Amino acid sequence: MSLLCRFYAPLANATIENDLVFMCRFIDNDPSKYIFGDTLRAWVALVDAWMAKEGSSPGFILLFDMTGMQLSHLPRVNLALMAKFFFYLQVRL
Image 1 (cartoon, rainbow, N blue to C red):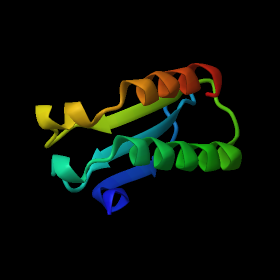
Image 2: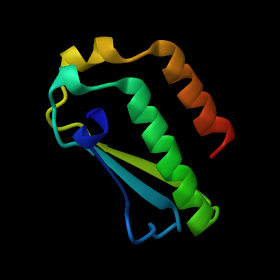
Image 3: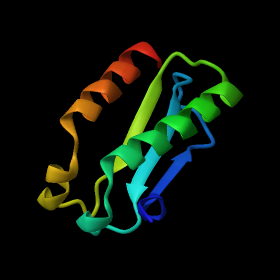
C-alpha cells in the first residue's frame, strides 16, 4: 500500500548543462502510510533502471515536492537507512 502513496518520474528533458532530473512527490500525505524503507527501495530501483537506459550524465538533480509533508513524517525515517542512502548517492551516482 505504501508504494501507491508516492509518485516518481524522470523528467523528459535534461537541463542546459545536460544534467538528468528526477522528480519525487507524495500522492497520499498520510504519515501512517509512509514507510521509509519502501520509499528508498522503490526509488533506487527506478533510478538504477533509468540510469541503465539513459546512461551516465555530468549531473543528477533530485527534485522533491514536499507539499503536504508534516513533522509527523519525520519519526518514520530510519537514520541508518538514510546514512546508507547518502552513501549510495555519493558512490553509486
